[in-house]
Length: 250
Ligand SMILES: Nc1ncnc2c1ncn2[C@@H]1O[C@H](COP(=O)(O)OP(=O)(O)O)[C@@H](O)[C@H]1O
Ligand SMILES: [Mg+2]
Image 1 (cartoon, rainbow, N blue to C red):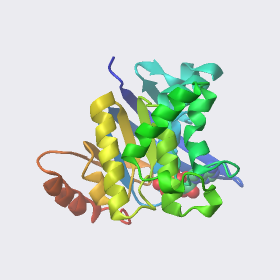
Image 2 (cartoon, rainbow, N blue to C red):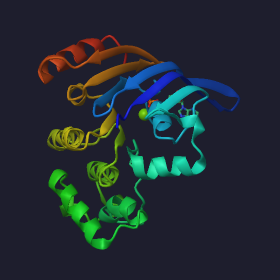
Image 3 (tube, rainbow, N blue to C red):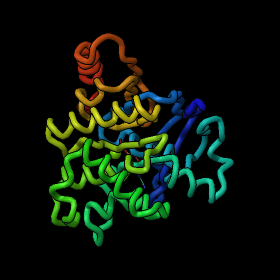
């Protein structure tokens, strides 16, 4: 089945203290199945808002999002719950780990909620440990963990349920180069083996150069789209050139 996200004329405004802020204006996008799709843009440009709408966390003010041909506006509450629980793995910008659980308990929580049996949960957890360096700190609580450890736990929690769609908000923002490369390789591997679609937000042109398509967003509008052609290095060079023209991207 083709897993496609089609976004048409999407706008989102927030109202706080009587002031209306247009976070997204007339965004149109097509995200094909099995690709890594990247969103770049300066702080406040609307990246997280777009990801939250794709994840069913926020609702649009106007415009439409089709997930695999179905208009999200037609989702009933149970469709949203199912979509968030089964289809999407979401990596939050601020991790959103539960403070009362260890990193390992946080990671396996989606499987516990799906009521998978203990043997299956352990098997999936062991698979994750092959990709992400987390075992040494798995019994620590979030407040005892560094930003990088929490971020890796948040990524593990998103991918352990083998979702068809991964939405990752600055997933390598707290990681060093070695861990960033490991996470990127994990994402590429997931795309290859599961034909999963990955949408990620980043400020890092190295991360973006691993992606298939990169869109630049400025003041809630798409201002440029680059598709990967040639080597990762030549794509990186093109990305840096475009980034330097869009204020505050990297
Ligand atoms: N819940 C909210 N209420 C009011 N304004 C918001 C809310 N969330 C985001 N915004 C505003 O919308 C704009 C886009 O925010 P966001 O999508 O978080 O940007 P980014 O992720 O690119 O930094 C910003 O001006 C931000 O202040
Ligand atoms: Mg953000």
